[in-house]
Image 1: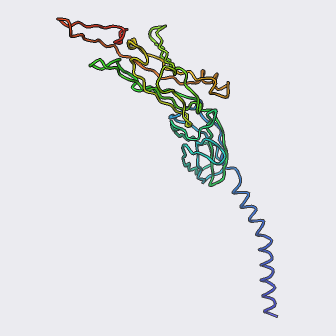
Image 2 (image 1 turned 60 degrees about the vertical axis):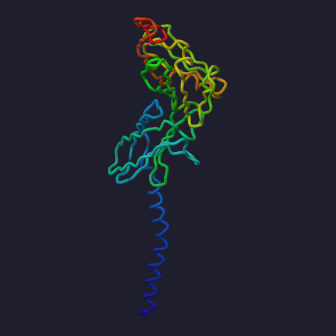
Image 3 (image 1 turned 120 degrees about the horizontal axis):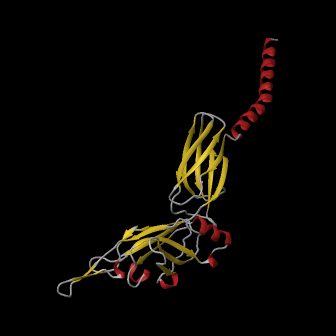
Length: 275
């Protein structure tokens, strides 16, 4: 009788565990799947090579989150930047990540996806446009070296429409209205095209690529024009005009000494950066 009583008790406990187990699993599963973090804002406009500020609202404390900058919110995904965020308490958290200049897997038009994960579970995602910018190196230069050979500048672009064609590079003097140099893609030995990661780079000897005599001195706004036929979305071109971050180039004043006369004379001609 005693053995039978023990078996009966064990049977009841076992039956109870079988009944409770699915309920407990369901509770754990619901808790694990609950949204614990939401993206409330992303700083805009977004440019390659610059910080992106992400604001999160976290509803549960003691969680480890991962904030990711990527080209998509689905697989396959190129992760451009990622940062772990420890949230000990519920509340608002501000995270800053830097978007790289070169962006493999960049979509057309260029788009940034900001994603927040809790473990392997996607909690929240937001997409924002990526706008292009131009960088000039060096930012300050004279027209020529001491021996009279032309100096060169490198014009680079980041965050541009992938595979687009640059039709013109324009240098507009900020100090003297009307002084403009326009470099056509057709005039270059190698066409300037945007790569699949949204970047391009071209080295331009000041003489003769930009000007046959050299550029007049002063500060220049450096911008580009895209070939419209290589861009599918016309709205992208209008946004480009609004948000393109141009570069600034300064041509330093320079005097050329002609040693052939006696005594030597100084010729501050237009090709030597005279203002």
